[in-house]
Image 1: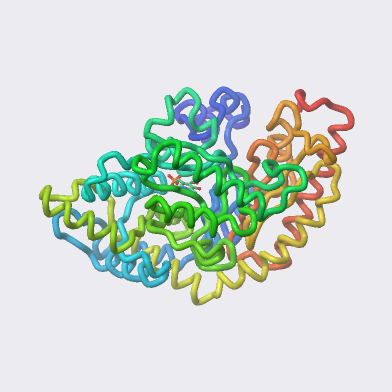
Image 2: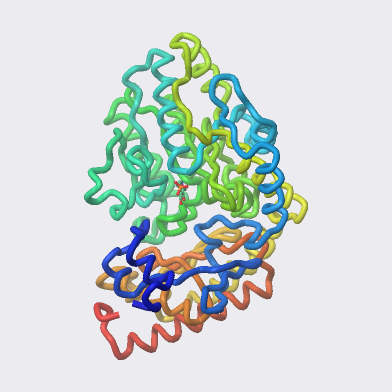
Length: 462
Ligand SMILES: Cc1ncc(COP(=O)(O)O)c(C=O)c1O
């Protein structure tokens, strides 16, 4: 393990259980201590600089070290460091943020409900849908439909919607009634010769068949990330969302758009719903809402949902759902300042323009011997590594090469994300063209070094 006795590394290994980490491997290799950040870079406690090509966890839109956000938090802390929004209390920042989000998001969405995290927001969405359907007298209509490879969080309910085995195995999930339909990844799941449109037709038909099999009177909602993130950065095939929405509307199945990664400019439009023409009943927002400087998420709901919930709360006496920090004034103030920065600096347009450069540059790696597919939109992309380009065969075992690329990239001053053998890119929205070229150069070097090593080592020993 790196680090002297009593160092932060050693004390981390001694005292911390890390999320989404192999705990025994962590004891062997120890942590990298990230000490500070500036723009698109973070620095470890040894002074090494890394280009943060995943913006932390897909989230630091305005980059690290943004003083305006620090000052916004300090101003709000000094004035009102905390208050809740239960039982008819409110505070100015949370109201201004709710108003701003309602005006920014698709027209159908009229109210905001605040939580601390994306997982809690998705749990809240599930509970709201159930509460609403009970209020409508549709007591059986409770099931959710999600997709394989979806990521919607890790709490009992949101973790049930997630469709990734590593997040469910040995946690006894799924815990709420959910069916997972095929994820819309053309490269992996289309039939040979099947066009994107035909693939989308088949997926819409699959969704309809699942609704009919379960009984439409039992299916409450379909949840999807417009462009799937943590499952491998999967842009849907052409016409997919039009066809999925038509099936949902036919059977009174609500549409929940999980924009936790996509929202606030990632695809080069303010929301991915704008990009794909999705008109959701519920939209879930987090991450770039505060650039993750403060924990915050929002569930945006339609007038119909709001009215159903409001009427039921009168009947019962309360809408008995909420968190100590729902509408916390400090994250709300930071979100407002963060949205100002995104707008004033045209970061959504930057994501579109510089994103195009990133897509072009990464696609130049398509001919690399380790690369099966390069995909993405705006400032989010993935490079899928394969053992055999012609057959698309995966490495065996899966994930060893990806993990190797992940560690090796650090030595080349680059932080990326390895999802199995898929390498994800999602840099801060402030990245410029020159920095994109530098990022891709560092990644190509890492790939070349890995290809060279694979000539002399088998995958299992990586
Ligand atoms: C699409 C999506 N939904 C929900 C979540 C869960 O958010 P959190 O980690 O804040 O609970 C994530 C986290 O990465 C996500 O990517």
